[in-house]
Image (cartoon, rainbow, N blue to C red; front, side, top):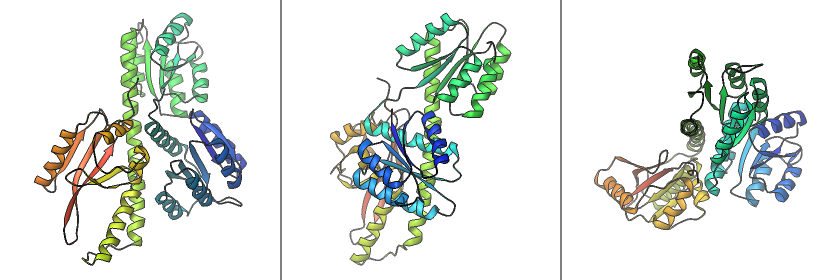
Length: 405
């Protein structure tokens, strides 16, 4: 379980956030100010830090600077008040993952926590264990299904009826809900409706008996991804769950990428407001422009590298270097092996070389290499205007989660 350090001087707000973060599947350490937080960070080594901006004693910015000195790779989420957006964007440029405005929208916080978890999984090569809430009032079928699902390395939480399911859903981060429709106390449709009110970030599959077809159709209208007739065919169920997990992964990834693009837009807007780029062939201005370009590459929360036609690397931005753990000199087989931690699997040197050469033969084009079900490389030419007027390839890397073992 990943560990989060929450630094917040408002006790009531801190306690509420702790409950929410725990429900999202994290272990939480609490600190009432920056000094206590930094001390806990040194001793407990949490994976993620969430800190308020304004606190007595050590400020949130000072916490960020200290944490980054100790552990540059630790992801930090900043909590800001009204009017502190410029400071928050500056913090993003210094390596903060994201910021959340007060009053906190828990849906945005959930998305940000999901982004942080995704980065940890990619960096460490871990495999997330999906959580399935199985709702079935008949004991023997429920236990039989639970045993089968656990063999697939999925975590299963069992609920005996709709009311029990809602309580367990409220206490646990749930990815997939499998529920019968007809149950005592509260039926499956009512339970799913209450769950959606609490948190819509899950997929649902319903079980239907004879005569339940209308209820199954209503469940699909209400957001269920599939329905299966009882008695449930095990192979059909496993395929349905795998498809639901795939759909969920795509949906979450889209939310994460949209947020990253929005943050990139804010960062670039702030940087370009600070510095005007003047096209000038004097060497000092060329250096200034190159430094500005590197700023932009490092500020964008995507994995990027710049290389020559012979695949020697000119620059690797911070996002990519944190993942691969080095600053390689060229794109080669050892680098591709490291990139497998990002889900970049189906890629050969011959394929990459051909795409790079195509760019030089057709300036202005964009080449895309599909490297997995949800991963790809995007390549385009960029020019650095100097006496040599050199052309380079900008490669954007979009990875995916590792496959199940």
